[in-house]
Length: 264
Image (cartoon, rainbow, N blue to C red):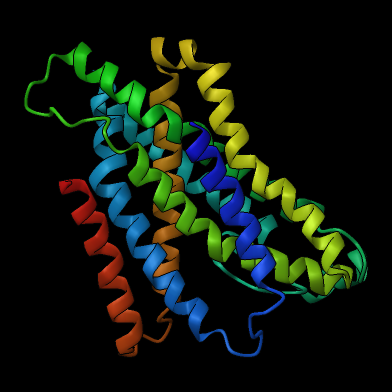
């Protein structure tokens, strides 16, 4: 648990701190990282998280509604975050917002949407091991002896996903606040969200999540959330569908690592 909390927290802080040294006029490295993380997150969702949530309920058809809800919830959140959670860097996402918020103003809606998104990720991650194992025992399914062993795979996926998100958020905050120190302080809110979600679900709501439909609902929401983010990343890294060897290799590498991790 300490390892997971530390990875989630310090990954965001380190990625945000690196903004001070990374070239802002050349984002090719960020696009390659996005392609890799998008492919990893997509493969992780299809191969690990989705099977776990389907095995956690006796009515798998109902899961589809939760996945749709998560997909469109992410669509709503992105109205306020402007795609920062999948690496979009826009100092002023839309021209008319500049007049209302202005230089020096904290983008409250952006931060709030990212914190909600990150908290949900953390809350479902800790349960992926415990609740799926209980579902396995409940359904007496001997054909899926490894269900619920995906905790650290999901941890890696969320950490990878948070790197471009933290870079994009920090870039926006620095541009808006004209102060790296102030921006870093607000980045702490994003860094704390996933660890708090993880701790909340593990120590506060664990019994409720394991004893009812709550885990299935929460996991379905996150599956829809991840499907939206990962496919958006993959489509946006090649908006004109042009062949790009670097992005193609990064995408294949992300998918293969997710597949290979499931075989360990």
